[in-house]
Image (cartoon, rainbow, N blue to C red):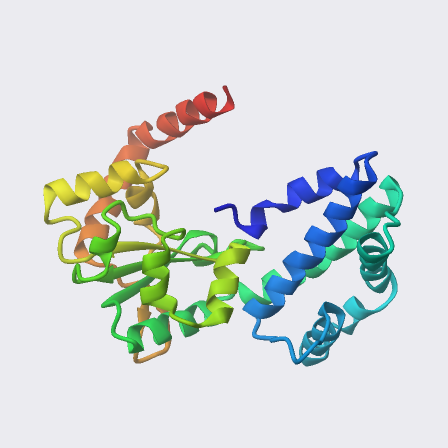
Length: 279
């Protein structure tokens, strides 16, 4: 399933189209993204409340009221005109409207994708006794300037991870039922692409050769577990935050990663992978 984070290039392309139906799609899809994002931020719909009203509530809560005025207001009005009156904005104007709506999306993503919010998710899942450990990796763990998502690695004792032998499970509805239940805001965050996870049997990874090999081979990047090993952070129940305390298996993988970097194996592999992908 393609997450909304990855749909914005399609939306921008449609906004440039000479076809008014494409431009209507661009405006409608952009507003839909914001609607789902509001759910992820727990700004739930009240009765027949529209997206703009919900956005206004979020903007007031976060002191971002600029998103309810001027060009942003005009973008919502253009969407309404296109959908309800079949009057699509011209390509140049449509692109400006989509750009404004994209600004709102990025601001909402910045508000969601934080270490504090990642810790809230980790605590709730640990409290539900679904997993034994929660780890943070990716751009948020590396403190990149504008991370796109919260990447979590879950360890359990095999009772849930066996539902998905192949590990990378953000599209697996069985696991999502186990993890997130009826929590609509987490499901909305998954749909946005702001929350993603990998599920691993912590009792077998690094100990059971067949399981470990199968798990690594099933990743989109076969070096995935090695690549995250040097920055993996552990959620600490006592402090309520993220600490640099990795399991032994990841300490060993981090040592291996440094060795592979010294021998330039990782860099060469990634360059070759990039060339193959570009073809």
